[in-house]
Length: 327
Ligand code: XMP
Image 1 (cartoon, protein in one colour):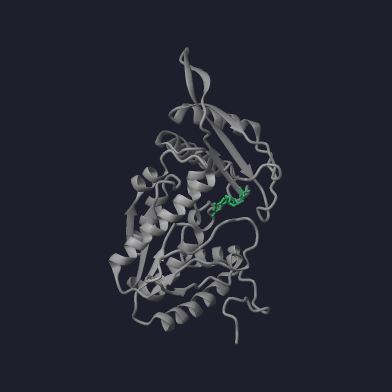
Image 2 (cartoon, helix red, strand yellow):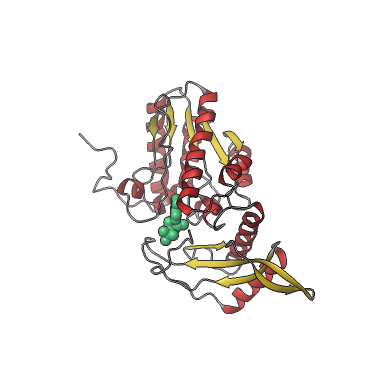
């Protein structure tokens, strides 16, 4: 029997809008045949893969798709708003927005160990999703943005597109329309479906989100500093033509302070670390040569605009010996 999770050897690499349209038409037919008149649930993070799956399902079955967007408080600036704008306002999707910020931050309070933080975030996510699924009752299908590298499990990009870990009595039949596609192909399909470039070309973002960039035990003030400095870094990289050129870039806020000076008074505040890397498969990475004047400008903006920050550092470490993330 044909393995539905194996990419056929003769499958062409999907590159052109025409190929994307053909793929979309084929998937729409398959999705309709699979789910009929039934409802389908989707955990919509706003990342490339779940967004493309959402857009595809909206085309195929419209309001039969129920999207659940969980805001765990660890998303980048503007992300929950963009999910609501694109899917609810522009695509008229059935979207449930769950504000779980306090819940996640309460669970994470005082937890400093990185793997423990990841576990708490993952487990809490499943719990929130489970609660939403139970409220909806009677949904048999679950859509997921599984892509081919997830099936091959290649590389250390720990993105996993599943809500595995749901209790036994809450089992679904899976709908995984992009499971045979590589990331670049998913992007071509996303563009053909009318998703904005800012969503389609988003850089990789770890599942635990900003949680692993607010080092040690997460506090709300440092989390805001990560979010605000990350937004400035992204804005400046975009303005200066580096968006799409540099593979991944973000900021990190450690859990120690240093002495500084502002308006002739001594300060004792957090530093922000800038991280930018280029890589092919995330197994190894190099640090790009960012123009010094841009680094100076970003430093100036972050120290002027981000509350509680008096110092900015640029991480020069390739992988190895540094991993891409700090935790
Ligand atoms: P490292 O830090 O291991 O990161 O060099 C390699 C790539 O994986 C991402 N990453 C994660 N992705 N869950 C994820 O979904 C995680 O826990 C996680 N940790 C790291 C990281 O952003 C980089 O792209």
